[in-house]
Length: 345
Image 1 (cartoon, rainbow, N blue to C red):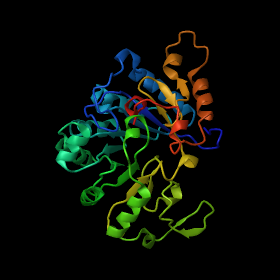
Image 2 (image 1 turned 135 degrees about the vertical axis):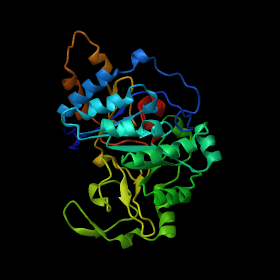
Image 3 (image 1 turned 90 degrees about the vertical axis):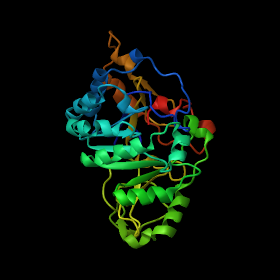
Image 4 (image 1 turned 90 degrees about the horizontal axis):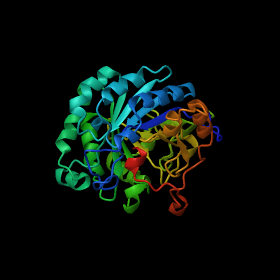
């Protein structure tokens, strides 16, 4: 369905837990209070929301957390969602710690892709950032997903001391696309200084060659134009090296690399005009934009014996009112103050 800005909303990110086996400094740095299980949506309720979302035009689902693989039965949920009529793809975002254990089963359940969060390849820095000594487990998980023939992408947060060169050398060697994500002022992330993807783009060009040499792309009107290396906002036409899922990354191929590099640049290059996604928190709150608290409590609807409104009516009305754009550049205007782990990655 379309929202009031005329955008086609076809992508739903579902957080299935607020628990995690890492303690990343910009997400969940300490032992924060987690939600009681009875207040989380059950898998049956998640499937019910997915079925309703599919009826409204949602085609792509991504399971997130917390860390989705720490919730028992996650593989079975993947299979159930994959079998919902109208759902075309089911992906997962994970920190990778348990991925080696579950990769084969996830493939058999129908998982279409997995995004693995990886901000450093240095063991000491990894432990500093995540609070755990699990780098080797993450790398083993990535290898296991590849062996299971699940398409893998790496998510790397562009934090202040990012060693992007080692990340690119690794992803180029293992032939996995990487996306650099600008730090957003959500939850604990507001206390951290992130880098600009625009500056990172320039640095990568200096090392691996000028993207403009890779050719041309087409505008929506069909006219050819040189790739604007400073415009890192997403459009389908800017993905010079093919489609990489339903998300907001703008992908480029640098001459000195043999895999695609994506940039999710929410801070410096808004992609709100092409935003096609909504989020469901683990407690059942349907969020329309990361920046704002505005949304609707679907758990209350699901568990209301009176059923004053149908789930489809509530979801349709909420999606139509999706905000036109975020206000990360004006933090004082934000109304969302929950930690990212409460919202869903």
